[in-house]
Amino acid sequence: MATTDPATVTEQFAAEYARNAVPTMLKAISSIKRYNRFVLLGALLTSYLHQAHYLWTQNAGYFAYLVPLIFDAAMVSMLTVVRTSGIAKDAKRGAMVVFAAAAMLSATINFASPGSLGLRLVFALVVVLVIGVELVAGRIRPDFAAIQAEAAALLAAVNDLTDTTPATEPTTTPAPTPTADTPPETAPVVDIPPAPAPAAITAPAFTPIPAARPEVPAHLMPTARFVIGRHEQSTGRPITTDELADLLSVTPDIARELLHTITGHTPAVNGTPVTGGAR
Image 1: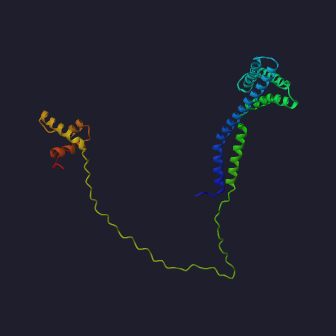
Image 2 (image 1 turned 60 degrees about the vertical axis):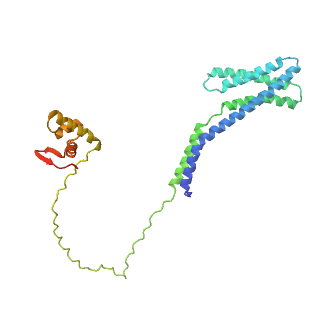
Image 3 (image 1 turned 45 degrees about the vertical axis):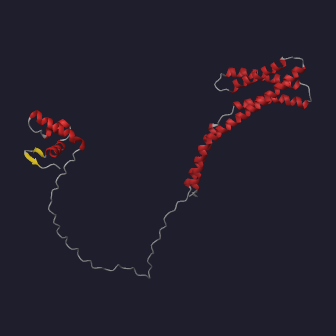
């Protein structure tokens, strides 16, 4: 069943927001970079074709298609140097100078091409668009300070909501105070008979419980029978409990039960012979 507690709902929202914040941000950054790349390639292609067409009309031959391509590649290369972190500052400054010079030359060629003033301005601004898109693309990164501040504000809001939730306090009814007209009630006197003397309890006679005999593992029976027979053949006397326990690496109690089960009798325990049939 869905909960209706405001504090619980807010905590669930905060947990879900924190869990989805990072993947959503990374997805947005990836989408922005794809769009920037599309805009960059479109702007460079437009400027390249416009400059190549203008240079071809100026009898530049096949160089009309090579020169704009070199300038566009130089602009992209220099912008990559500028926006890449970790490169030395002097290299970035030099790359920015080369990029500015190539961009100004490319914009000048676009503006100098024949056509109306508005059309020439549009083609010149295409180069400016390339500059702006690349500079913005190099600065796209998460703002960790803003993320931390937003997470702290969200957590503080949840804590405030939890702290201000009204708690139910038990209500107590005050006892009535006696007035002057109402005489105080007196408890009735009850005669309590004396408690009878406890009867003497005679403890029953203690009957000792015989100790349980240990269980004999079934897998030891063939080995014990073989060891007992070999011992009697080699020594000419019955095997003792301790000898059988040592040969089988078992406790004396188990060895005694093995002898009792196999031979029908058990050697003397503490000087007293123990007899009995097989179980």
